[in-house]
Amino acid sequence: MMNTLEKQDRWLLFGFALVVLAGPLLLKPFGAGYPDLLQKFCIFGIFAIGYNILFGLTGYLSFGHAAFLGIGSYTAVWSFKLLTMNVLPAIVLSVILTAVFALLIGYICLRRSGIYFSILTLAFAQMAYNLAYSVLTPITNGETGLQLARDDLRSVDRLFGVAIQDGIPSTNFFGLSMVGYSGFYFCAVLLILSFYISMRITRSPFGLMLKAVKSNQNRLKYTGINTRSYALTAFVISGCFAGLAGAMLAVTDPLAGADRMHWSASGEVVLMTILGGVGTLLGPVIGAGVIKYLENIFSSFNEQILNSVFDFLPDAIQHPVVTFVGLFVGEGWELTLGVLFLVLIIFVPGGLMQGLQSLQRRIFPARPTPAADAARGAH
Amino acid sequence: MATLEVSGLKKSFGGLKALNDVNLSVQFGTVHAIIGPNGAGKSTLLNAFVGRLIPDAGSVVFDGISLVGLQPHEINQAGVVRVFQTPEIFGELSLLDNVLIPAFSHRDGEFQLNGWSRAAEQAHVYEVAKHMLEDVGLYAKRDMTANSLSRGDKRRLELAMCLAQEPKLLLLDEPTAGMSRADTNSTIDLLQRLGDGKVTKIIIEHDMHVVFSLAEKISVMAQGAIIAEGAPEAIKNDPRVQEAYLGGAHL
Image (cartoon, rainbow over all chains, first blue to last red; front, side, top):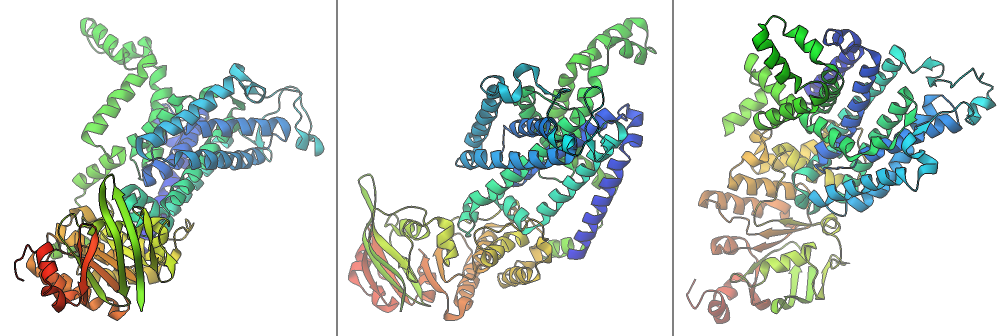
C-alpha cells in the first residue's frame, strides 16, 4: 500500500515536470506558447502552490498574501541595485526577508481564526500597500515603482569587475539570461521544485497535522498538539513561496510596484486555488494557469478577431453574436472568469481537479482496490 | 497512591456555583466513576482537568504536575487524555489518519517540523494505529472518512484515537451515550481490557449498568460538590445518594 502511493507520487512528479518543460510546445496551439506568458504561468503557479499550503491544508484563508509577493519583488530589485544582477542572491534574500515578515504578521494574525484571521491579513496587506505609496517611498519609489538605473551601486558586480555595458544590465543566473526561453526554463525548474516540496510536505507527518488543523482544531489541541505553531509554520512556508514568486516577477522583469500588493492580487491567488481545487497538489497550478491565460489571451481579443471567428454566420446574426461575445473578451475578460467561477462553484465545488477526477471516473470506471473492497465488505 | 489530587476546586458562572469546593483523590490504575444528576458539575470538572476552563480557586495535581493554568495540549502531553461527550474526530480525514495523528503526537510531542519525511514510512506509528483500529474493530474501514461512520463507530474511533496516545489518565465523558446495548457491552469489555491496570480511568456516566460493571470507586456529585464517595456497593445503599440522584428510588 505504501509503495504504490510512493510510486504514484513519483509518476505524478515526473508527469508534471514533463508537461511543464514541454509547455512551449503544448501551449502553442492555444496561442500561449511565448516565454513571457509561460513565465507568468510558472511564477503564479509557485505563488498558488505556496498559498495552498496555508489555505488548502490548514484552512486558514489569508487575504493578504500579495503583501509577501510585493516584499519579494522589492527585495529582489534592491538586490539587483545594490549587490549584483545575478538572480541567486536576489531570490535567496527575498525568501529570507519574506519569511521574517510572514513570521511577524502570522504571529499576530493567527491569534484569531476564521473570518477575523482573514480580515487581519487583509489589513496588514493594505497597510503594506499604503505604506509603499507614502512613508516608504524612499524604499519603494512610490507610484513610479522601483526601477534599475544605469548608475546603481551593484557592489558585488563591481568587485568582480563585471563589465558595465551601455544601458542597464539585464538579470542573469551566472550568465544565463532571464528573458526568453532560458528565463522560462529557469522559472519552470523552480516551479517543479516548488511542486516537489509541496508534495513532500503534503505527504509528511507535518502535512497530516496541517490537515488536522483544518478538520478539527479543537480535537487536535486535546490531542497534545500545539496547533498555533503548526499554523504559523504553514503561514511562514507559504509566505516564503509568495516571496519566491515575487522575486521571480522581478527577475523576469526587474521593476517592482506597489500595485503588486493590492488586495485584488491577494484575491486573485484565492481564486486560483479555489478554481483549481483547494488542498489538491495540481489544482492551484492549473487554477493559476487558467486565470493567467484568461487575463492575457481573452483580454487581447477584440471585435475584429471576433468578426473573423463568426464570419460564417449571416450578417444579421453575426452582429448581435459578436456584440454579445464581445462582452466576455477584451476588457470584459473578468466577466468570463466570473461565469467560469460561478459554474464551477455550483457544479463542482472541489474545483477543476474534482471535475477532472469525476470525468476520469465516468470514462474509466474505477477498478476496485483491495482496500476499498475490504471497507465495503465490512460496512 | 493517588495519581490525581484535586483540592478546593471552585468555579462560578455568574451566580451559579458550578464547582463548589471539590476535593477528589483518584488512585493509580483504578476506574473511578463520577455520577450525579444533570447540572451537577461533572463535565465542568472534566473541563477544569483538561484546561478547557480555568478554575477560580483550588488545585489539580496530576503525577506531581499542577494542571491549572496549563494549555490543553500541555495537559494532554502530560498524559491526560479526554474522550468527549459528542465524538470529536477529524471528520474529513480517513480513519487511519485519525489514529495516526494522536500516534504521531505521542511520539513527536506538541510540535515537530518533519515536513520532509513520508508519513507512510513511519512503520512503528503505523503499527500503533493499526493495532488501535483493530482493537475497536474498525480496521477494515480504515480508508473511509470518519464522517461517514455511524454514531457508535465514531465513539469507538475516538476511543481508539485516545488510546493511541498511551494515556496515563483517561477521562471518559459518557462513553456509551447513544450506543446500542450490544455496543455498550463491547465498549465495557474494551475499557476493562485496556491499560492492564496501568491506565487510570475517570468515567462520567448516566448508565448505571456501565458504572457498576466498571467502577472500582464512585464519587457522587450534586450541585457542584461531591456528596458521597466509596465502593459501588456502599454507594448503592447510601440514602443521601438515593435522595440526591435517584429521587429515593432503589437501584
